[in-house]
Length: 58
Image 1 (tube, one colour):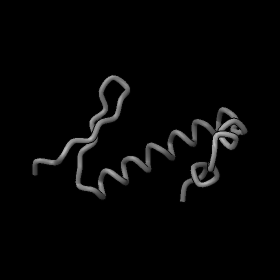
Image 2 (tube, helix red, strand yellow; image 1 turned 90 degrees about the vertical axis):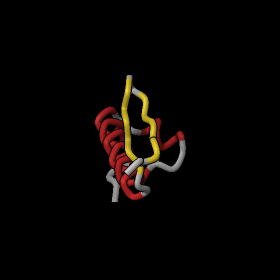
Image 3 (cartoon, one colour; image 1 turned 30 degrees about the vertical axis):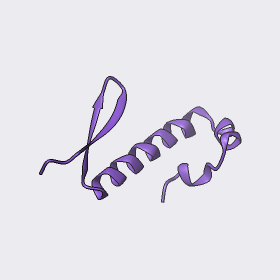
């Protein structure tokens, strides 16, 4: 499902990634967060580089 995230199981796997794979891993993680938040009925707010979830008021 995810190009790089599915291959990473521990810190050693992370160390083996090149810079392009790390960028792809970041994109995989971003997609996973968005998918998870949308399934759980919450909103995602990104401020100053941090991610926070809030209960949806709707």
